[in-house]
Image (tube, rainbow, N blue to C red; front, top):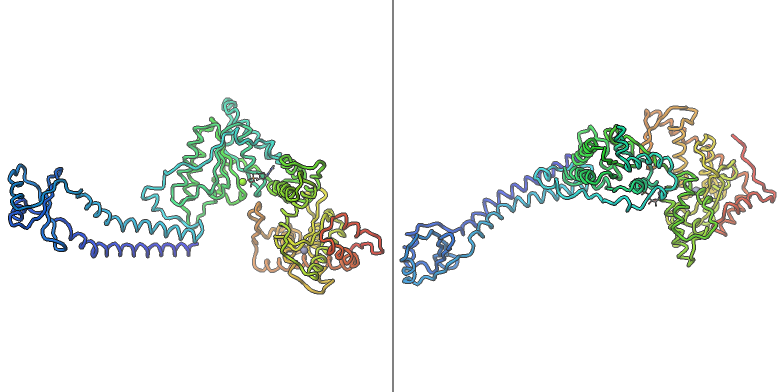
Length: 630
Ligand code: ADP
Ligand code: MG
Ligand code: ZN
C-alpha cells in the first residue's frame, strides 16, 4: 500500500510540473503575439491630426463610453487606435465629413477582448485542475478504493455540501413488511420488539426516564434477512424508514460523505420517530488503522456518523439500525454504548426455520397440495433465507417451463439441485468411460456415507453435469439438526469425502481431477480439527489459528511459529490419509455393491436415496459389511 502511495504521489508531482512548464511557455510565446493586436491608446489631438492627414478611413464611436476607435492602414498592416471623444467638439463631424471618413456609432462590445484575455489566462488553470482530477480518479480506480483521496476537491470549496444524502425514504406503512414476512429468526424478532414499542410510544419511555438504544447492529451471513428485518421494524412501528447503503457514502471528494451523513440525520430529525437504516455499514465503519496510510474520506464520514449518533435527541425516537456481515472489522468506537451497543445476531436458519421460510415463500406461488417442505428443509442445511426463496422461485419457473399450472414436489427438488449445484448442463457430453468413472466416484461417496453409522443418509445421487462444473454429486440429508459435532463424526465426513477418489483408485487404478473439490473440503475440515477445535493428539486444546469473517465463509489465519506450522501440516495430512484408508477399506469390503450401484447409476443418471438403500440392503449374498474400526 505504501509503495502504491509513493508511486501515486510521484506521478501527481510529475504531472503538476509538466502543467506548470506548459503554462509558462504559453505565457511567454503565445500571449505576446495575441496581445500585439491590442488597441493602442492615443491622444485626441493625435486622432484629429491623423484625420487631417487623411490616414483614417473609418471611425467608430461608442456612445456609452464616449470612446472613439479608428484604424490606420489596410489588411495585415492595419493598426487600431482609440481615444476618448472631446466633450462638445462640434467641429468634429464637419472635419470628418471634409476628409470623407466613414462614421459609425456604437461599436461592438469591446469587452469581448477582455473575455478572450480572461479565457486565455484561465485555460491552463482549468486544464491543470481537470487533468489532476482525472489522474487522481484513474489512480484511485487502479488501486481500488483504499487509496487516500486527494483533498483538493474539498479545498477548492466544491464537493462538500452538494446534493442531498440520497437516502431513500419510505413511509413505514409503505414498506408493507412486518414481522409476519420474516420466517424463523425468533430471537432477532424478540430483540427488535422493544425497539418497535419504543418507536410507537417514545413518550412512555421518556416519562420514566429510560433511554432506548440509539442503534442496533444486525449481524449475520449474507441472505439471512437482515435488510428484511430492518424494514419489518419500520412496518411494525408504522414509522418512516430511511435507508442508505454504506457504499453510497464513499465518495471521491473528502467531506462529501460526511455531508451526506449530516443531511441524512437532518432529514431523520424532521421526521422522527423514524428508523435510519445503514446497510453494509462495514464499508464506512472499518476500523481506523494506525498505520501511515489513511483514508481521509472514509474517516471523515465515520467521524461524522459517530458525532451524529451522539448528537441526536433520542426522546423523539430515532433508531439507527445497521447491517453487516463483517462485525469483527468494525471500528470499536461504533460499538460503544450509546451507539451500536446492541448486537442482534441473524444466523442461518435451522431445520424448522428453513421449513417455515419455504412455506412462507410458497404462499406466493401456486403449489400442488401435500408438498413435503420438511424433506426439502432436511436436504438444505446451510442454505440462507435468500437461497430458499430462490429455490421456490426456481421451482415456479420450472413449472412454467414444463407447462404446468402448479408447482410440484419434483419441481422443488430439481430447484434445490439448481441452487446447490447449478443448472444442469446440456452441452457437456461425457464419454461412456467418463460417465462410468463419475458413477463409480459418486457411488463411492454414497457407500462410505451409508456404511458409516450415518446420521446423514444419502438422499440422492446424480451424475448429470452441472453448470457449476461439478460432474455429479451425492446429497446427504441430515435427519435432524444437531449443533455439536463429535470428533468421530468429523472423521466420518473425511472418509465420505475421500470415498470418491478411493473408488476411482480401487476400480480404475488411476486418479482423476474429479476429486479436486472433495480434497479441498476434506483439507479444510482436517485443518479446522487441528487448529481450531483441539481435536488432534499432538496439539490438544491449543488454538493455532484465528478466524476472521466468520459470516463470509471464514478465513483462518495461522498464528503459530514456523515449526508448528509444519507440524500442523503433518497432522492434517495424517487425518485426511486416515479418512482415505477408511474409505478404501469400506469400498474394498463392499466391492460388489459398488459395481452394482455404479452400473445402475450410470444407466439411470439420477437415483434417489431409497433406490440406493434398496440395492445396498438387497440380500444377494453381498450384504454390506462394516469396516473394522481402527
Ligand atoms: P441480508 O440483508 O441479510 O443479506 P436480505 O434481507 O436482503 O438478506 O434477504 C434477501 C431475501 O431473502 C429477502 O428478500 C427474502 O425474500 C429472503 N429471506 C431471507 N431471510 C428470510 C426469512 N427469515 N424469512 C423470509 N424470507 C427471507
Ligand atoms: Mg442486505
Ligand atoms: Zn466427489
